[in-house]
Amino acid sequence: MPPQVPTAVSDRHQADVKSIGALRGSAKGGRNVVKRLGAIQSLGDLTGGRCLDVGCATGEYTKELSVGFGRVDAIDVEQNRLEVFRSEGVPRNVTLAEMSVYAMDFWDETFDTVTMIEVLEHLQQPSAALTEIARVLRPEGQLFITTPNRLWPFEQHGLQVRGKKRSGYLFPGLVWASPLHRRVSDSAAFRVKEIRELGTNAGLTLTGATYMMPPLDNRGSARLHRLFDRAERTPMKHFAQTLVARLVKP
Image 1 (tube, rainbow, N blue to C red):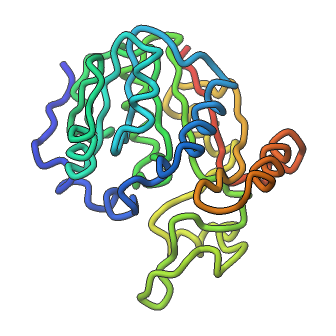
Image 2 (cartoon, rainbow, N blue to C red; image 1 turned 180 degrees about the horizontal axis):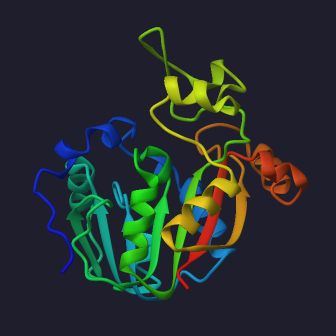
Image 3 (spheres, rainbow, N blue to C red; image 1 turned 90 degrees about the vertical axis):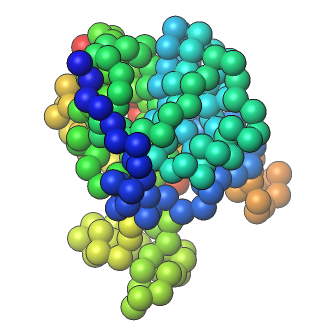
């Protein structure tokens, strides 16, 4: 029997909620959504019977995922995000729930696919989250993760410096100093080997990884967009903003 989840989920996970940031987050702008889902699709198939979208927020990614799956369960710990999702329309094959990834109210081996789009970096217990995801994945089921790339030189969610919130772009390279970065940032960044280790500890196997340059939805010209898109096809991609990974349950 899956564990029961308390009603006031966000109250029990304030450390995770604290680091999330803006309401729309990575879904602010269509280019963000298209590029992240495109990067995921370069690693595996986003179609199937049942999908779980962890940290669905206001639903921009979930709505796109619903096109390829018979059913999508979307969960988040923040009520205000779920309320925005509901107010803007929920596809008929999508079910929303306020729920923590650490204790999901789903049976073992329920899902063909799980997505965590810009979520892992906000979790205080990423190992526990992946272990719980492995529990609800069916054998040969897949987990897709997008998360900040540690080789990108800027912290993307801001920093707490001398008691004040500062832009990460004011401190280039700080994210490379892991101990210091953990002290001044509410969020994390990862390299491929760290995702592999987290997956292995949870019983998941890393099968592929790729990278995404900044989408620049609200900045830059079409020419700059094309330049960054081309960079994703060169060795420069390893220093891109976002790491995308696919893990499979044996």
